[in-house]
Image (cartoon, rainbow, N blue to C red; front, side):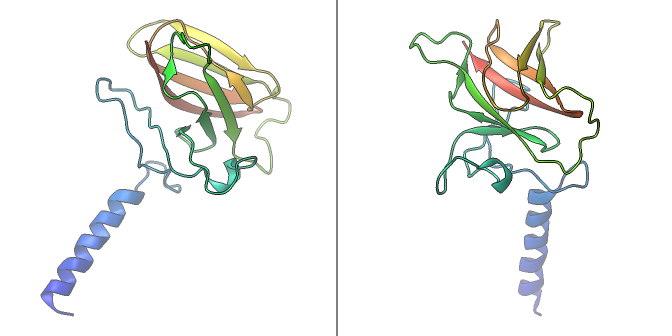
Length: 167
């Protein structure tokens, strides 16, 4: 292989490594998302197709805004995007929570309810929301606009994500 071929191969390897690196050694979550430029918030709203484990009920190559949990164990499908503190048009902040199916629960005695503890970034403002029955459809409103860091707990599982709510 000539020097030009080696250079092309080396550049390809570097590009691929940058696209697939994860901090936990697991498979990488999609990274084609956009983050809010005005915030250090790590909310990454994806617009590509949902993963196979989360696309039940969607037809074809459905592309809906969604955010993956940091561990990749849950995805928030955003039927209202952007999420808003106040919705003057009568719509709501509908989020469909879809958890990756687990063969065994880490704690079979843990309640199925999805408990969301949300903290407004940079403050001590915290709210708790619950989705009865575990991950599923919900309306999640918060008292202020900004980046909310969510701690998610359900059926012995945990994950985290950031969601941005516009004014």
